[in-house]
Length: 272
Ligand code: ATR
Image (cartoon, rainbow, N blue to C red; front, side):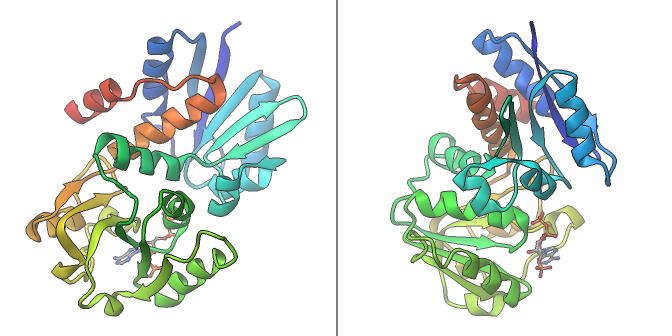
């Protein structure tokens, strides 16, 4: 019988996940289907319950339901717990496993696709919302020497860093407002804010982009003022298509036990 998966969100019509997973299934010979499900804003748990009853094996969860998916899960992976959000659910007889593959997807894109050696580098993570929280633990685990979380509202950055205080890997982590970035310089600058979606630029000193720095915007599908700022400062600028494809591959690996090839999928998405 064909195994059934879905991406659940609201809105969800724009999601590329069905196409991405169809490519993965074809490349690895997996018998599965993957559909979009738009959940009512107040009805996430019921939507998932219904899908499970109809034989669903697992789901990806996108905005605005990642925290609801975290609460829905009976068992959480350590990376979902650190993110306080789940983007991947796996259904089993004895309950639902909640995972978060966003951070692993980002790190895999950085390391495998973009050739960024993470060990010992200085990383600036801009933003203190759910997108930033989701990638902190995987960035720390990748071995960066310094991880500075900078946010427009400094108290939010401090609160986010404090959440990781008890983690044994948290020593490279610190928090600041944008003012605190004067004179600082980084090897990797990641934009995890939603500023680019509204076309807003970030008040970053050009000096944050160190020599040969990589600038990464988690947003995909359109150029952002952040990437333009980075290029103007001489940095290499990358959008979030690779993170999208790699987080999908991590979910696919969890569900199917096989890692799909991502390069052709990424190339096809970029070519559109
Ligand atoms: P998400 O879950 O996608 O991270 P969020 O929790 O609403 O969404 O967080 C959005 C992030 O983008 C926050 O860090 C926000 O900064 P504040 O905490 O100061 O609100 C940041 N952000 C959004 N628009 C911004 C802008 N124009 N300039 C700077 N930061 C911005």
